[in-house]
Image (cartoon, rainbow over all chains, first blue to last red; front, side, top):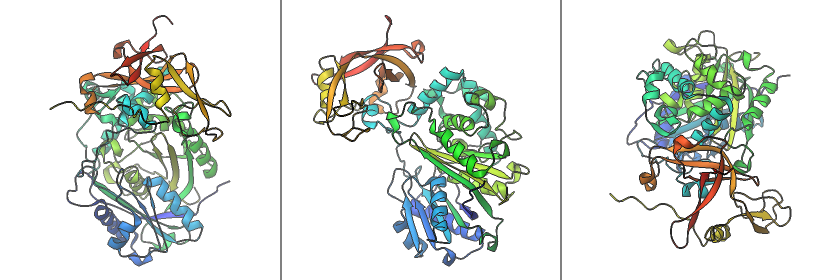
Length: 379
Length: 138
């Protein structure tokens, strides 16, 4: 039995991705908002809720920083420190269903590249101990996670390469993408390690960019200019005991998100046409392909090498190029792309007949969230 | 350009001071809850299981299994530039907890699942780190 949250995305907007010098994260976010309002075909006065997301590792992007630039006093406003696409979307659904607001604007902007934000810091927990061992940057724990996967299941570096190679193939069809030069498995294997067994293409682009999303009730959704993209089901699961968990690296709680999500949707992975798997590292894609049931646990390597996630494959993944090729915007551009694919607006890279999208993210070793989306409310 | 100094533990931190006092004597100790006996690693100011604040430090055998490892080929921390390439291991201790530490073996010698043993390496008069090495006798 479907437990639909009864909300829909009716507007999306994005800035260019890459380098946007001399603009604050808030200014970048506002430019995305202007695009989203135009997409939805509404004036800003229609907005009665605002959920902003901080720019990663900064204090920028709060609702109080955005309010004066947007010139609105929404009834409901708040900020998520790690909002990213899923958490902001889910909170918007909760606020709408609770009656706090009817049409909510979600914002995100970062100038991480222009501001030269340093990512070589302990990531993912146990920071006191890991810093002493020179264990910095998300590449460290991600390398451990994939090494463990290789040990348990025989996954190879060639198979892992297909995450980055496939997404680069998609990015070549996306004018917004930062990295569009061709990448083959041979190219990948010839590159030096950064943190073995990971190479540069296994790690996120760092870029500037902004995204904005407009969410409203399913009942109102037809009053907007766009074809509404309905939220069919949402789920979250944390693993915030972090280092105390028996298997931090493999993030077994991903499977708990998937089972809650599919139960609430009333269907399983065979109904999903396209998948947006947040890819701060390629390893997250490997893990999520398995956790969300596109292949069995441990089968992610061969599944990738068979080309299922590539253009023309059975389950296209990150059709904009993702964080590995398109831009840094932490899952927000995944949501932007998912909506536009479902609205059949993606030109050269459009997946024909894509009806159901999975949008899934994780906050490295802390927690995760996922959403099923479709233009067909009764899917 | 001089290489920046590597990070050192704060020996005045009461939460971890007993750990560093023990490593100076080439001993590995971990805290257990005095109420429920839960092994608290990494150390926290109170017990994650029962929220009791009492803890006692107990000596353990510095042996375990290499759960996984990562090998740095770029100095993401410039203080470790002279050590490139270096491997960091996550060691599943036989007593149950997992501990991070530098591995003393070459990358080509390492495999997930190997038995490893702690080695105590003094970096100055006050600080001794626990490094890990493949346990040839295991």
